[in-house]
Amino acid sequence: MNSKDKLKPKFFSVMKTYSWGQFGKDVVSGIIVAIIALPLSIALALASGVGPEEGIYTAIIAGFLISFLGGSRVQIAGPTAAFATIVAGIVATSGMDGLIVATLIAGVILIVMGVFRLGNLIKFIPYTITTGFTAGIAVTILLGQVKDFLGVTYLDGAKPIETVDKVKAIINNISTVNYQAVIVGVVCLAILIVWPFISKKIPGSLIAVIVGVLMVKILKMDVNTIGDLYTIRSGLPHFHFPALSFDIVKSELSDGFTIAILAAIESLLSCVVADSMINSKHRSNMELIAQGVGNIGSVLFGGIPATGAIARTAANIKNGGRTPVAGMVHSVVLILVLVVLMPYAALIPMPTIAAILFMVAYNMCGWRTFKHLCKTAPKSDVLVLVVTFVLTIVFDLVVAIEIGMILACVLLMKRLSDESEVRGWKYFDDENDPDAIELRIVPEFVRVYEISGPMFFGAADRIAEITLKDYTKCLVIRMRGVPALDATAMHSLELLYDRCKARDVQMIFSHVNEQPMKTMQKDGFVEKIGAENFCAHIDDALKRASALVNTSNSCSE
Image (cartoon, rainbow, N blue to C red; front, top):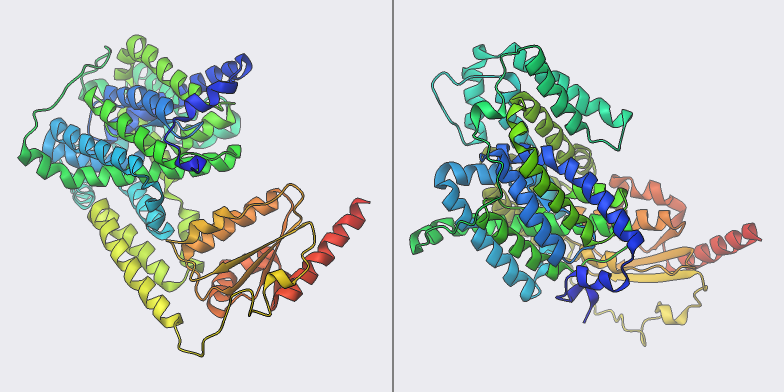
């Protein structure tokens, strides 16, 4: 069985070679990540329409369980921006019991997915859809925080849920802007933007919170704080199981499915990013089981849905965390904060929370990637991207993913039909193929891979299976059998290029067909690789590789 398919938590694997030295690094990293997670967990809980302590409960319970049972060495889990608008909608329409039931359903779905080893099914969601709905969620979070940032009061007592309704309510009540709130928000936002240039050790969100509290207290500013709008509880979370009935389960089934899919996408995406940073391989199916258990535990003890948090996971890695112990320490530290410091959260101004969420939205929106795809991806992929983005904002994530997937599948079938043609049968087996790689002499320092078939979102992960030896100096990729290349596969090739560049390996392409070549040129990929490294025939590619290897060897001598 492949290591990625093992249903064994990484915690038990890494403990076999664990050392006191690594324990010290994990403890330090866990403390730092907890400091980062504290203001974010509170802010994301408020954006989700629940109290501040629910965010801490989530980081504690889900964070610990997912680290302990997860398939990643370094994943840090907790409340994330991706869930904020979904959770807020469920809470507004069905209350906390509705949210608990939906998340319990999601947890069961995630566990079943992991047990039946369905982790790889996530690859069938195109990169354009994940980019589109992530950017859409970022916009909804930003628009949802404009009210608190400006200190607007809804004179008609409205409590809009949909993003479009929130925008209308702000416009209708714009005359109630509180300029003192704006000042606090602008100062805190400026701190969040500038602080990373001053120090990377102390999170800017913590500094913004301290400055915001001091401004309101010392200057006696008339600005709403968390304590003005919410009742703060500092005790440990309590177990609560909702009243279940067939009707409530039926009504929350759709929301549960949405939470499960989003949790799977976000957590596995975070794992992939983490793998690239520490040169490791996560166990996707075990990670899904851990996500299911973590989400069930979170909502039964007063929390909200959770998933892997890319920013917190990256912070863990950068501060020396290399095992699940760091994530477990992060949860323990947050328990101490919950018991000792939680009452002080009442002092945090709402414009400060809004400023923090503005930065969260900016960091997750991926506008550079969005812009790059709009400029370089095939028109069909751009259409899927933009439609998913708009539907996420105007309607919700469920509608966006459903229509995005249908549109992607229809356009994929059209693209494949456009590339199809009827011609005399051409043999590609090694015995009859005069171009077979077995008939060529491949230099020792050269690796050759042949890609066959249309490279679209469902098959793009195959590119990640390309491996490099320690002594590899050139990677030749033969694409004579690739009639079409979409944005997801193009993104996978870019990731492969980054891997090669980091290891000083030159990529060379052989026989790239018309549509893939146009996609690569539009993306700027041909310019990155160098036009001279795109060869018409495998013999030319091997000669080019041999010349580069010989030149490299001569220089090293």
